[in-house]
Length: 500
Image 1 (cartoon, one colour):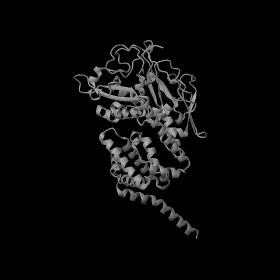
Image 2 (spheres, rainbow, N blue to C red):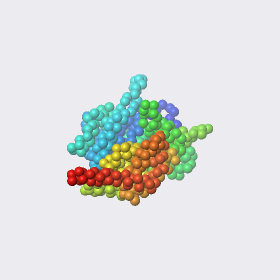
Image 3 (tube, rainbow, N blue to C red):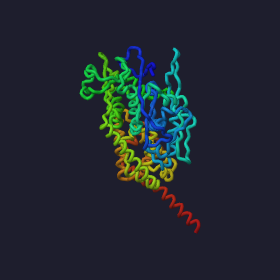
Image 4 (cartoon, rainbow, N blue to C red):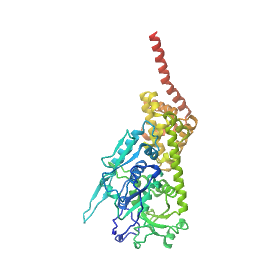
């Protein structure tokens, strides 16, 4: 079961010698699950090569769907790469937080699966002195959505399947339930990275290579005085900050750099918007305690390395975590049952009035935030009520608002995101809907467009932000929504007169 430990993009500062022979032994019995169910979420098993030597950053929703499907694989018995795994529409809705009764639901489902299918990444496949990179995709061609059965059928690509099953060594298994309730995709990636570099209680004589987590030493405690007392019985591993950022980044697209390195160039921002959230979610939702500390090399001003510390929770501590997950699952099931018993209109009204925008909105993609806002403004009703030009302006308003809510890459933007969310929640509390507000904002933006006062997306977003709680907006919205009624009444009066 011994095999050479491959070179890894993430390396500790102590990794200077050639990698020693690596031996990783982890085994977890998992049951076979033909269909995913939130109530019976199981284990995920991945090759360490797939975890450690790939650069990808799936959006949170895609990451959750992928992991839920991987949890169905029986890593000991599934050998057919053509096997198809399934998930119900209702379980997809629970994972993504989208109302299954919403008219946009099917479109959102299809978009999510298609975007996951289009996500690809390169992995080093060098052998026999020949340097090669192979292109991998997650999903195979037999993936389909059955609208009659209300089921998703997903096939993994034949090239990726061997990294998910029949693994004899150098693999990692973890409870998928720990990850499915995380809001940050960075938390998901770092959690599996941490586990992949840990041998549990095994001691496989890696020496001081830094390949895996090792018990904290007095020398290490001197390096991290601020958390010395907290981590004295932890294990540690050193990571390069630049390499870690690359691990968490999507491949560049057509000259556009969307990497974590570009987004969070200084350590302060990386810590505030990535690492602090990761620490919170891992400590609250998983079987690990996680701490970290940045370090500089002597004579350097820039932080170049991170000391990561982990410790497994006790049985009592883990029971608290599992109870938290169980309570969340029961709540989700109760909400789902309640929604099935109500009409679509009643469901939307209840959701808008009693489910304000919470902190998870800040971690959504712009597209996901737009879906959430669409429900709050009753987008289908607006389409029936507003004139085409005003409706086009309403769509733009929702896009600008979604960007305000999800752009948290600086302290100023984060403040604006929270203020936007709070303003919208105050309107939800008082109005029970954002429909009137959206109609009024659309009228304002349409008038500004006709007057040639709109400029760049950033400028237009600022207009939306500054008018969030302008009372004139609600007056304009009510007037705009009454126009349709007035037009219908005038038409009816005319037709009645014509018939007479």
